[in-house]
Length: 379
Ligand SMILES: *Cc1c(COP(=O)(O)O)cnc(C)c1O
Image 1 (spheres, helix red, strand yellow):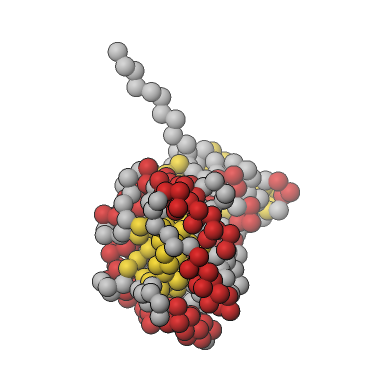
Image 2 (cartoon, rainbow, N blue to C red):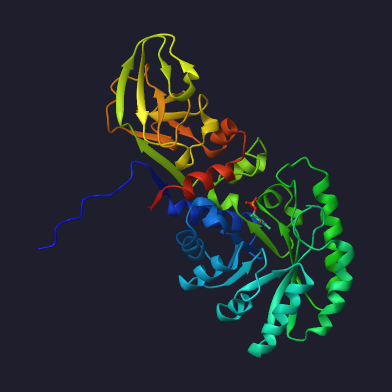
């Protein structure tokens, strides 16, 4: 007889709403228009949502192009049966070239050295390989400078099995709908694309979620979307009309539960360092979640959580695996009650933007932290 295994579920559970992922992809495809291709950015385990499960949802919604940081992520997508084009954005290490051929991955190139190694691998495989060139038009990050482009393209003639299929760049501040830098940078980028595509037609892509939402004139042939597909606006939806009409749906929620309820008298110090001292008799819920779970220590004495559909403040330092919430005003809380850290309970909602504000960061980081440090479930 097979006995049921005892449940080994953690108190802390991330829940991913698969239909929200599907819906966000559909909405963004409608928003940018049918003839603009979307590269779904699923790096960092899909911003904490789980790369494979997320890619499956986007595929179902019609996605045929994915972007990841490193080659091992691309290999994992293929091994899971993901179809379409898979871009590797951060290059590769010596000896990894073969993987581009074995798994049909598309490299983004920004050094001569990579071009040479890829070319040698192409000759070995007796197979042509297409790549996209990364140009740094003002991000100050990865990519060759605009002044290097012509020399780079000239070198291509030395490598007959390498074929340039696209030129990409990246905006540093397209999440700010007011930024004047974005359009200036776009003009510069377009000039480079026009010069380069005189020889062969190439695919142009520069827009991220911010640009697709706030500077749609920069969409080019393809947009590379991350945060919007996960249901968030890159600027926290700070009041642009576009953002409100488009109504994306956050896909991630994060729940813990009460492990102890207790009442402490006035003048009780709470947690390490006693950074919080009770002013009056206080009812406390002890929660089994801490900075090791991505609920960062910088949220100490700042964050709020939802218990019985109401907001409760986190008091005292957040520990590695524990923190305390003040539930003096919330009657009837018992051990085992669910506690929402990210998401909705009753009429209340805590978004990743709100947590990000308490942490002094952006929603992206909150999603990565919570999503990549906890058990994930899908519905
Ligand atoms: C992550 C990433 C994106 C997506 O940015 P979002 O703001 O999440 O839409 C686009 N392009 C590149 C190069 C990226 O690394």
